[in-house]
Length: 471
Image (cartoon, rainbow, N blue to C red; front, side, top):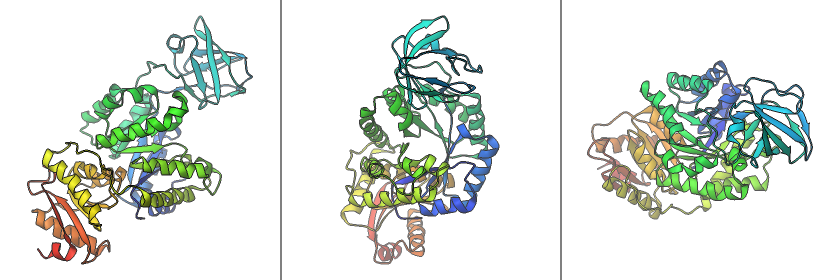
């Protein structure tokens, strides 16, 4: 694995998931593999999961749900519209669109959408404005030229639909995540805490440890971010639908606000959508895309994501290498520490020592920060400070190793539990020596605990490798 701190999520499709390809992605900087279930069957997903796990047990897996989305129904040839054309929109799940009537998958569309509201189709490529209502249909006027096809996304800015949080397919995939011990579920179109709780209740019935990532892609999700973070493990800023639902000039500010909220709560955050979109078809990125990646990293995100670039693009490996190389260069010019206030996550002493450890490592130009963890909580707290010194996390749970694949600046490995903190230091430092991470003269900052692995950090120790192993 290359030495970068920003984590990379790569979307993997069943069309391009052979083991040699995934191995190349892993060694080029992929930390997390994402499956978009909107375009896969259960059998497809199981094949992808099996191939990912055969590459490395340190690659985390995220499975997306579809969530409460609205789409156009199938149409014979599509409806061609010009500016000013009248289009009728009807809620009729399962019914084909016909003539100039566009049928949607959501039955209550006529009741929920007021006159004067916009309806955006196919990622906003076609805009309709509701002029009036006629029986069970919305009478709309087209605001631009285009062709309305079936199975295309429908966004209704400013309107909360009454769709259930989970579709039948979503529930099937939640059960798959439980059975296969998947690391994360990324739930789409999260509107409020209830959308997260519905999935969590299913997980709790099976005592599952699958973690939920809330995909924020509408105004309700932005407005309710605090209550969502009370229940979600982390957040994905899904800027595609978000920039359709919300005026695009506001997106950079919202992105920064969501990152800050997640850091404050010590929860991982992913910036997603079109980061290297041009590389789906081209071998080189645009300058704007490079700047977009840099802005996300300067804004202190944990992770950045590739979607179509690796799922079906012509240059998947080049896209990942590009993203990794940009991350490495940007990290060199970042502030050496994100000097945020201490937040009590474990306990007051532990969280004070965590910040002290990161700051000491930066000020003394240490080679590494070394810490152990049972749950990952201490490590995520260390990561929140976004220090320039890599955190080498020794975890007593293989699942936690994968969960930390989403946390900035963390290189996590499994380690059998030690009887004492001194034994932990000896074993952990020895492993860093064997892996060539440090030498005898390297300075290391150790953040660990003397009072049991569930109580958090209780001391910070600073010393050279030679001194630490000869104590």
